[in-house]
Length: 363
Image (cartoon, rainbow, N blue to C red; front, top):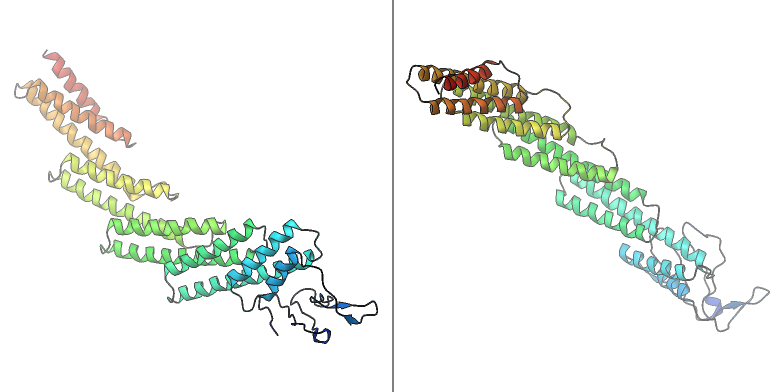
């Protein structure tokens, strides 16, 4: 006797060659006590006795229902296709005598498929946690489950919360893995065993996974990514601040140029900007202190240089152009300091004014 093996739905249909061969069908989950539909070629008399007579042609919906129940050990895709066909015909013939049966069968079948999809994702997440599935395996599984949900929603199917919940768990598992990877890179970075780019790539990976998770879960809570990203950006800022401090120390000793310091300032500023953009709420970091010191050290050196050039000029040992060049260097240092929001002494501005006066006095 052929029987359907659709998740959540069971209906057994006898192949009827004679009235005595009639067997009732059963539905798992609905209409358990319903009067079975008489197969083609079988009818009942008023007193309940079976008789044989030609049956009227099956409606398109009835044919779709028959095809649906005729499936044996079907795949999820086969169930989906057969169900869609039933729903399509149901939409065309909502008053068909088999409309209720088709609707109930479709809902039960798709619920079974949805349960299968959720179970598949849950199993994949478990394997991923054990290291038996790759990130790509998990991503592919989540993508397939989401594709199923989108397809069902287009058809007006509801009751997909279980699949979405499993997908959310999978996305959280992925983002937590990315966060753990990032933590490992941060540790290596702090010991000098990972580059700036290694750290930035790991931050990017964790942020991408977190963005995907929030889109699926609709919440910013529930993962370790944001905490790990905050630690990573702080590590990068501290590294750039330390690099800047080293360049400034060389600069103060005359072993680095103004441009060297400015380049190191840009590196620290970039890391600080990233820290702020990624949501670190701290108002202060090591980078800000290092940037402030670097800008003031440049200004102090330009002040001393300008003062020395003016003294030479007054003694006739430097030209007016030498003074103008020194003024330009001093004004650039002062402008940089203002753009960086660094407060400092007014000595540089005073020396610029004195230099301008010295030139004017000799013209």
